[in-house]
Image (tube, rainbow, N blue to C red; front, side):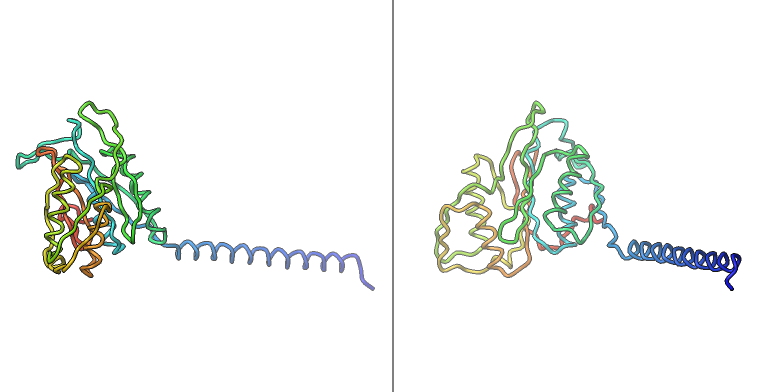
Length: 257
């Protein structure tokens, strides 16, 4: 005969068993959550303080990702965005960027977040990123004029340039490109630091007509077979641009972080 007490004991035992299973489930859930958290990709940081913080941050990101991320300065015309360097010349006043990102994110999203971090810090220029033939192109959309007013701007390298020549080296093509770009923009564009060896190839016939200036640079870089990128920097004293081409992985010593 099953007594009332027997039924009660069975019911209690069954309830304890269910509760113990629930506790085990909660513990497993907690372990899984902790494991997932420990396996998640840690955020990477870029911290720079530089006369050109976005330029410096891009060099670091470029070195980490091994991607070509080109950069164009805004013109520095607003007095509050210009400073005197210890050596004497005028330079961009500069600023800082403190930026975190996940290495799993798409490069375009990482760069866009970097541009937003740059703007939030109140640094000069409002920038955009585009992509062309494997190159990520960062250039200013707006800059401040002498009165501090925001002025729209497009990429300097949108300018269509035609070059037709025979028996010419890559470095000579770059010189012609800078000369034609200067005339198209009515602003001096000078050759700065450029490795000559990658552009020593002689073209028996070079004929690129009415193409954006950047298309010439991309063609020359691809023809060289080297991992190269460029930055166009504005000199606030001389009021001209300087075209620098560098191997991907180069970082200015003052901004290695």
